[in-house]
Image (cartoon, rainbow, N blue to C red; front, side, top):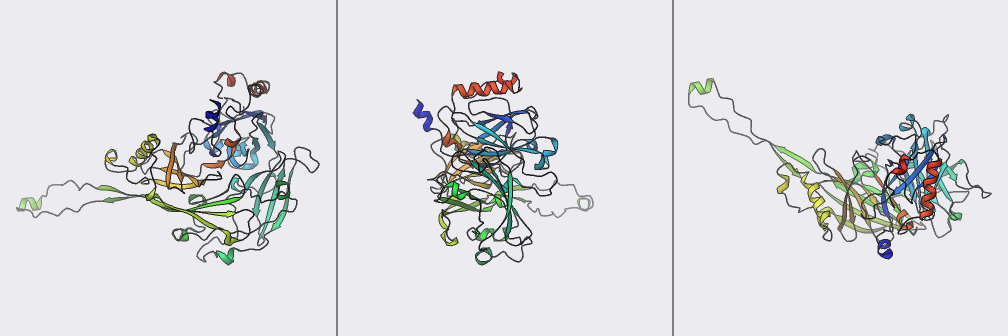
Length: 481
């Protein structure tokens, strides 16, 4: 029984970037205090009955957060690495518009006792410099250490400002402070291999849209050195369908890059997307010739011809690339897989996935959607790819939605290597209200046991919450294990 349950736990998964506000602790609950001294509990919610692409999420309880917090004020997952997750929580109303008024926490999924660290806010309230979420990443190191890093562009060519927070000081003491230093690109390559078109208004050398961690054969202690260097390693040449989109659209719409769990390979995907469209046509009607003068002088009003709406199916094609670590040369990019949406195989092992896809496509049609047959799985909007970090697979999660107003968003898992749809999962409408990037890949499921934590650790979490002043009401709810 134990082995069967353990086998159902995936090695990697995906996590919603929008957290929830709740008060139901379980064995994954970790606790700490906010910068204002309020108790806070963070719980990882993974539905073991639903495999990816079903999204896990973090549930946060704090007296300062309302149970039904709006999406803009909800806890926000920023970055993840190994068993670590970095997120921020607004600590006052201004936190919605400025990260200065947020608390930053690091959650560690320890099977015996999950941990939650409050780290200093990197933003000086007197300084104009701010970090966007996509400019910050967390990096797991040896001996349960970690580093939080942010890379900011400067006005000097090929020069950046690197901000670092280390979980331990050089003397081994826990808790540190933010440091910053200027770093330069060693050998700029972009203009040599991928010149930016002159028609593009934004000619900046660099814009940070995703930060992550890359390890080589050296140990993490060596990689997290005191003298970090910045290397310029351009992505593969853009696909022809995206030439006009260079620097002119959101980079998350059609691209993603990640490092696998073994940390020996960089994985990259690029999509060429043709969105669905509606063609509305009105048939022409000949004007009849009147038979009498009276019909000509006083013509009868005729109803206008009825317009028809036809759906022009959308489509996409995706190419995946890989590069070995340590990174050596731009020429080491290797083209792995290519897939077209029209060539995908529908899931046959679980009919509910096909049924959900059919329902999604039906919501896209203008004429008798119930009568349509599921011939092509992509008469829907699909975008914002998220690559799985699992070592031996090339799986991408795609945000998909029907064309009809109000249609529900779903996450679709596509195995690019086998050209098959692995699964479909609905999204929580309370946490996902816009068609935008909503998840990131995590490796935490790998660190979960059949029953995460122990009964003793759960009791400790409950006692801490009560002692911290969260009240007994939160403990009256059902404990999820």
